[in-house]
Image 1 (tube, rainbow over the protein chains, first blue to last red):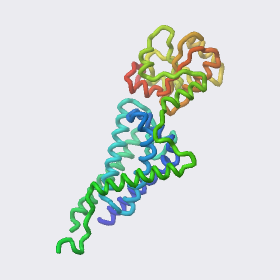
Image 2 (image 1 turned 120 degrees about the horizontal axis):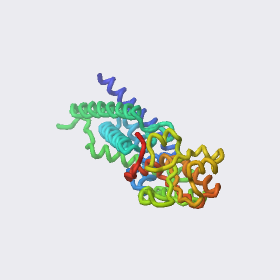
Image 3 (image 1 turned 135 degrees about the vertical axis):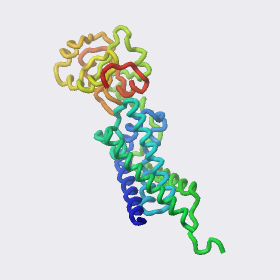
Image 4 (image 1 turned 180 degrees about the horizontal axis):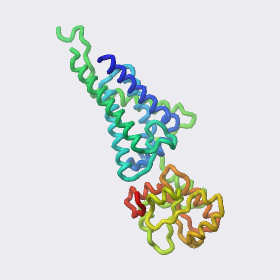
Length: 140
Length: 168
């Protein structure tokens, strides 16, 4: 069982690293997607677009290696909660924006599929977080 | 002796702080390493305005656009496809798909009842689309004197609760 959760944690790390790549390559395209959500003030959009992908990279690396695993798994869960909330808000408002989850290209619009995909990742995040915290409590 | 031979975990707040500090540090360092660093604060509204001005167009934000709806001589033009328009659009808007600019734009605009002295507000889907600017530029070239673009598009209109029509 332990091996399963370690592999799950590492897979989650790879997902976060993969998700960060496109945003790092083209931060302005990512900034435009963030802006289109119409949640953040314009002043904050660029800073978030520049910082968020690198936090995803650090979280991804930590999940992959197991370094500060509690913080990384908790951060991953919190980030997914924020992403899903933003998507739900846009969906509720009828904003047909790009998700900006894995790519900055115009082929990832918010849809039921993106909710299922990100919801599944969120579920994995919670599982990994639970496992990491339970193991940490057992550590003498 | 307590703690001897055991691995002590760092406090959770410290783990979170390490992640944030490394993330922010890396983003600053890697942005500085870019050939053209991206500014940390960007005035996107000014960028939109500059882009529109370059095309000879004015811009309007959705809040101001809502107040123009229904005024005499003001016509909202939806530059999206007919399908998107049919689904949901600004109340009273006319659909002039951006593709029309590649054909006889004068005739198509005339069929819609657009007059050259109308105050035309063009919009498309959202901030990520350029159709409104492209169509606006074409309308200006075709002789429509007062063309304004709403860069936030229909998404921006929805966000401010502007009146809509259609069966979405």
